[in-house]
Amino acid sequence: MFGWEFPPHIAGGLGTACYGLTKGLAKHDVEILFVMPSASGDEDQSAVRIVNASDVPFTQSWSDMKSFLNKVDFLKVSSNLVPYIDPQLYSEYAGSVMTKSEYEQFKVKYGCKYRFSGKYGVNLMEEVANYAMVAATIARENTFDVIHAHDWLTYAAGIAAKRVSGKPLVIHVHATEFDRSGENVNSQVYDIERMGMLEADKVITVSNLTRNIVINKYGIDPKKVITVHNAVDFNEFRQVDVHRGVSDKVITFLGRITFQKGPEYFIEAAAKVLKKVSNVRFVMAGSGDLMNRSIRRVAQLGIADRFHFTGFLRGNDVKKMFAYSDVYVMPSVSEPFGISPLEAMKSNVPTIISKQSGVAEVLKYAIKVDFWDIDAMADAMYGLLTYPALSQMSIRCGVEEVNALKWENAALKIKDVYAAAINGN
Image (spheres, rainbow, N blue to C red):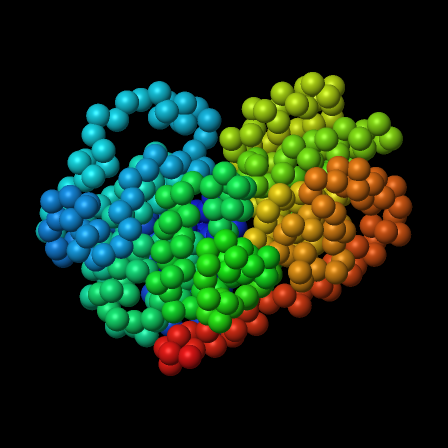
């Protein structure tokens, strides 16, 4: 299994999903070799054996990336794509002049190791290509039945492993370029995604929403695209006790502050609520390329004294944020699934989600609105703040609902996908 991150060091929901899925598969007697670019050594290996790609020497020598990519016959990529880089680093990177292309800079010799950052930085495409080379080495040196690659960053690695081993490839689509960028897609990322989908023996999507995008936007045969909804691992979940410094109600947005997550709609709805309710505060927990614009818009609306930006939260800080919250909102423009609403509901927080999210397919007791309908979003916030019976019902039914969404059940469906891929069905 190829992934880009694994708890406790994660940047979003992908690592969390990989962790839950591997634990679920282990309960169904599936042995997993989990390969990641840069392991820290503190990952939970109770359900998987972690392979740190940074510790694996290349067993072939290549003078440049082009010769390697030609050798294994998949797409050649050179790009300055930096999807999750912070604004300051992006400015520094965009202002620099690259004197050589990535092809010219790239050089790996026999027995050398590549030190991966495992991040989403300025050399992301170089890391993606090097990760594919390490994948070929690992595939030659291990025995396995099926290859599972998570999201576009690992598709080239999955293809390289398939070419070397001849084993079937299953790719897992947690998000597409259309989710991240709307209709202004990066053509190189799109090509990598489509390449992975075409090469794969089976394609797993996290929702029917994503499945439709894969079929209609990428032209993939519907017969090999299977939806398996995500879940949440609550085995180690503990409610967090917090002391509030204020008596105001708290409405929370938690996620990357990017176009995909719809932070601007959250801000506009918040301004409407504040015209009707004074004892409420809004928290935007996360970071991203729309952070500065969001701060400016809050100031323009005159609600800065009611709005708080926390920056990126992880681990126990996320649980604390949910404990502080009276309402959680996920106004995503396009969300393939969305695990955070499940975490909020488990934390006894009534939840509002956009209809344009995969998780809307499995939840009945979250309030659903169109991401663009800020009036409906504001109405839902106001209702949960003002009517205790509505809030209490959302909490009670929400906990029961998310408790039924187990990774063990999702893993059983994925094990069936593995069997179909191995048997050529």
